[in-house]
Amino acid sequence: IEYPLILINFKAYAEASGKKGLQLAKVAEKLSKEYGVTIAVAPQLTDLMFIAQQVDIPVFSQHVDDVSPGSHTGHVTLEAVKDAGAIGTMVNHSERRVRADQIDVVVKRARQLNLVTVVCTNTPEVTAAMAALGPDMVAIEPPELIGTGIPVSKAKPEVVTSSVDLVKKINPNVKVLCGAGITTGDDVAAALRLGTVGVLLASGVVKAKDWEKAILDLIRPILK
Ligand code: G3P
Image 1: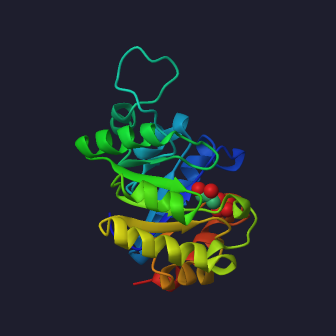
Image 2: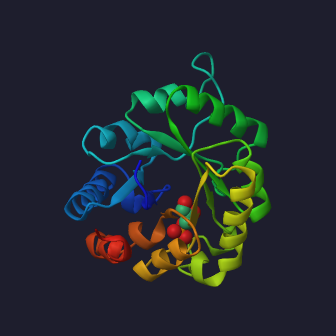
C-alpha cells in the first residue's frame, strides 16, 4: 500500500450499501487513478466480494473475528475476507470493539496470510498498546468526534501527536492514521502535518450529496 492513504469506511450506512456501495467505490477508483493518490474502501461485509471484484483499488474488511475457518457460525474469518478479495482488514473500531487478546490473534494471523491490518483505537494510550502488537497501521479516533464533522486533526491535535510520538517509541514500523470528523482537504493536510500517513473517514464522504466533489476536496492536499 502506498501512502498517504485515504481510507473510506462505509460503516452500515444505507447510502453506501449494495449497489450504492459499488457506485461509491467506483467514484473512489476513478479519482484514485485520475490523480494518482491512494484511496481505499471498507465496504459492508455483505458487499465485500462484489465490490472487490469490480474495482482496482485496495478493499478492506471493516471487521474480522479471531477464529480459524471451521465450526464458528456467524463469524467472519481472515481467510474468508482474503478469498473475497480484501487486501486487509480494520479491527477494533469504536463501533465494533474487540478484546485485546483477540486483536493480537487477528494481527498475528493476518500477517501470516499477508493481509494488512488497521487497528482502530480511542486514546493515545490504547494506540500505544495496540502498536505493541505490530499491526501495519493504527487509526486513532476519539469516539466523541466520530460522525460530528468536527475534525480530530483540528479539534484534538494533541491526541494525534501524542499517539504518533508513542507509536514511534514503541514500534516505529507501525504507521498512524487518524479519523473522526474528517471531511475536508484542510483536515487531511492537518492530519499529515501532525505526523500521520493518512486518514480514516466515513460520514464526510458517504453522506455527502456529491461523492466525487467530497473526495476531490479531500485529496486536494495530496495530489501528485
Ligand atoms: O472509521 C471512521 C470513523 O469512525 C470516522 O467516522 O463519520 O467521523 O468520518 P466519521
